[in-house]
Image (tube, rainbow, N blue to C red; front, side):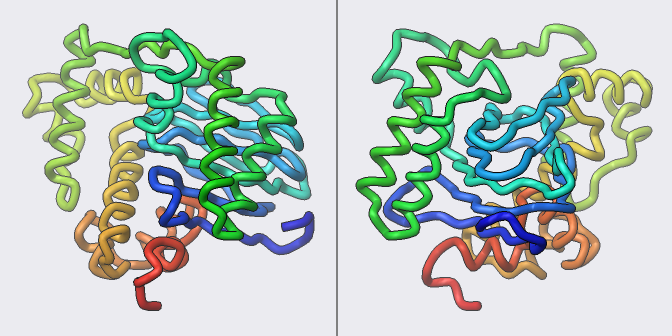
Length: 279
């Protein structure tokens, strides 16, 4: 995808490369909502500039640089220049990264990336190579370059990521509220009822939830709904039934929120998954 005026995106996976999703996209007007991933994000920018909020910081990644996001880290994404940006992104599972880290380091505890943007053209080229090999169906080459890229990035920009335990009463209430929203995703309670059931006030719960998870409850719920929608689509569910199952009003609502978080609409995402899906 060379620079141009049309937006294009393909979100897919290679069956012979388990534990990794791939996104190759050119975006100009695209704006990703606040969201998280259960996986890591390793995005090699090939043209233009992507800007994104990462926790409380606004950062920019240009050609030859990489955007790195750890699992469950709130972030956004949008064009940093008028012509937008083109990138090739890997979404490796957390256990895959942990396995590579165990092979190359003596770090203990959760391992992740310590900077959201790094200037490493060599690693970026390895990420591009993973994509190109996968597009050719060459799983051996794709897997090899994936592990070389991750090892290189962990050695230069990796470290132990501290976990944030729920020590305060507010953090404990936030965790309990999240569990309720997970359980009642299709018909969530109001903020007032949720707070009352937890024995706190709406504003106190709102503040605690955002401090703990980086997003207010309604934003977190949309993100969680899209996560669950992905799992349902991966299992072969149709977009229309998926929308109802996760609590969206209808399929157009699922389409809009899904595209603002995943980068492609549900139908395109589904077509990029198992080869046996019918379209």
